[in-house]
Image: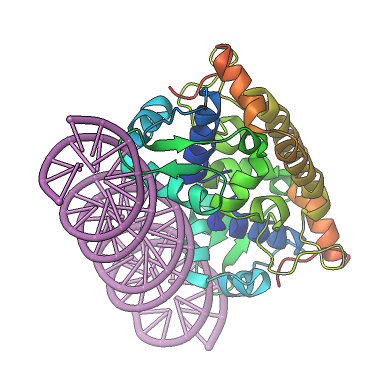
Length: 143
Length: 143
DNA sequence: TTTATAAAGGATAAAAATATCTTAAATATC
DNA sequence: GATATTTAAGATATTTTTATCCTTTATAAA
């Protein structure tokens, strides 16, 4: 479904959203520990998220990553879009270059419902929503 | 969602299911033309499907591939399972090794519905169902 | 202003997926 | 039996994804 990069991205973003914010930032090291991901690879992914303004970073001592209040309203859809692209939401399940109502692949109609279900869910699910479950111990980011 | 190999597999299997059967077989060449896939790579994928008894093949002149009547009842679920494995249906969307009701990832419940939707659809969709749309020109296998 | 810290960026490596090529095996037809 | 045809199998190549390492840049604090 999602690439590893995308899974790390989502888990990392949710993790950062669980933290108090304010003047506190979290380091790459702590993030990759919290979500059990390879540190250097995670760094590359976070760089993309920073460039796309879904995440902010500060270098140097007491530096690290943070997501401001508004940023915590980011939908999971947007993270997937930035890391994996949106073919998962709008592309053809069977890989036809031009798959449409007029020229549908074999499973077009059956998959339309799935894609809409997935996209709808991802569009209505925000980081802060997911962070709640982690903060109260109902949900987990690793193992 | 699915690997390229899996997309080729599904399109190829549907294509073969549109053909009359009987004593007629279809060649690798014709299959990869019909679904617009790289011939040699498609051969490798069909070999897996043959080994798994989802497809039968005969070597030599007038040889080729065919799917007998019963085989056309194969569900798309089974093809995905054989080519990509079933992580798409049962695995954790965020990559947790042990994701369960007791130890759910951040999106566990939201994805449960998606996975069930997808699995249900793939379990109830057969090759012969999909072949109908191709045969009557409603659906397409390429472009 | 020096030093330490932490992310950014670039280069490289390793693994997996995709793709191709060559030879072998099976089988129909002459 | 020889030949031609077609899939199977094995080796190899290419591309993409995942992962690591090293250097640079920014910044806080001594």
